[in-house]
Amino acid sequence: MKISDTLIIGGGPAGLYASFYAGLRGMSVQIIEHHPELGGKLNIYPEKIIWDIGGIPPAPAQDIKNDMIEQAKTFNPGISVSTTCETITKHEDYFEVITDNGIFYSKTIIIASGRGIFTPTRLKVEGADKFEISNLHYTVKRFARFKDRHVLISGGGNTAIDWAAEISNIAASVTMICRSDAMRGHEAMAEELHRRDIDIQFNRCIDHLTPNEAGDRIEYVVLDDGSQVAVDDVLVSHGYDSNCAFLEAMEDQFDFNEHQMLKTEHMVDTTVPGIFACGDQVEYDNKVRLIAGCFSEAAQAANHAKLFLDEDALAEGMVSSHNEVFAEKNKELMKRM
Image (cartoon, rainbow, N blue to C red; front, top):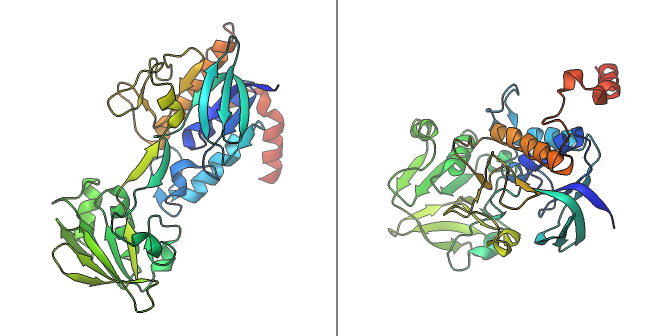
């Protein structure tokens, strides 16, 4: 059987950078990802502009994702998408990882599964599901599809606020309803919405949906106060449902906080020797919850995995400006430039 040096569970930003850095450390790498494509939550908002990665100019999430995937592939890891981890069994010298797409073996494991398998929380209104193929949306792939349309957005968090801000630039109208008496998103963005031509209604939620005559599209949204809003599209941002069955199956072996996040020591060490963790699934003192923050965690996870395999190894990888592994790659890049 083929045993990799490390197996990374999750192909979001943390898992992708862990793949690069583990490869840099000379480790053989296998990535498994539940979703059909790599990139994690960046796939939810591909056109959203990402500003807060150090040294990277603001760019759409799709571009950031593509660059991260290209970097992750630098040292030719094995990659298996549409592959869900079900159980992890520790043997004397390796781990056996059973998935719905076969069995993998590895000497170490890096958990980078985010907050688990995420799916948008569906609108809890009778018959709503039949409109998901027409004009009820839980993600936004392209803002341009809402040009000159009447759009209702339900939600008050950062995602809903971002949608409203972007769509208001091109839509015929935007109505935003929030179940509470205030938005939960960042204050600056919420304040910006109030300066735009957006109808914002607090303490309101969707009561039911009225279809068109053909019954295949939403024509009116009826709110809980009885008022009606004529719509071309409805966007729902009520958060995400997530699960991480393999972690739940190992609940007695890991240390979790009250939110079912892994509590780690030294940033990435779990309570199971040989299993390390990074990204949104991890909780420790002074954690920085940014994409940029997960890069340091991913590198640390790879370093700790390397030391687990070889206690005489260097504590960290050599920086690229002095690392001979990049000599040929630098020549190729210079030719292209």
